[in-house]
Length: 192
Image (tube, rainbow, N blue to C red; front, side, top):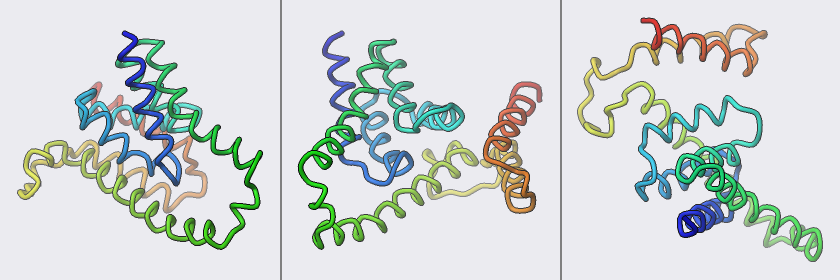
């Protein structure tokens, strides 16, 4: 048990330490670590992403908590969550304590300028992967063959409704769209 808890801690510590740009930018690293390591399936990761986005709190903390709890119960959730937040805490502590002026140097400013396009690329990659994973669940099995029958029409319809509402209605807030998506998901997948 201790080995599992330490593995979760260090896995999420690495994710927290080497990710810039927020929660979406860390999804490729989370995928590489937890799906690539055989801890969870690709579909379960997509489900966790949906749950993490639907619950209050930072995305990365929610993901770590869900995956840790899935692997080792409440203690697993605690260790994974501590692992993902500790790097940010330590970095901010040391910057506040020792190096606020260091961030103002030309070197650091240039480093952050270089990181911005990488973060955009990571977020775009995640968006495309999530859309394809939701619309065409079997795309990983047949990446080079595209058949319209592979598209999950229910998921496509939910995405289309949310997209149109976000583009045409000022009252379409993210909270309302999450709620609407949950209701449509229950209707389409629970009843139909």
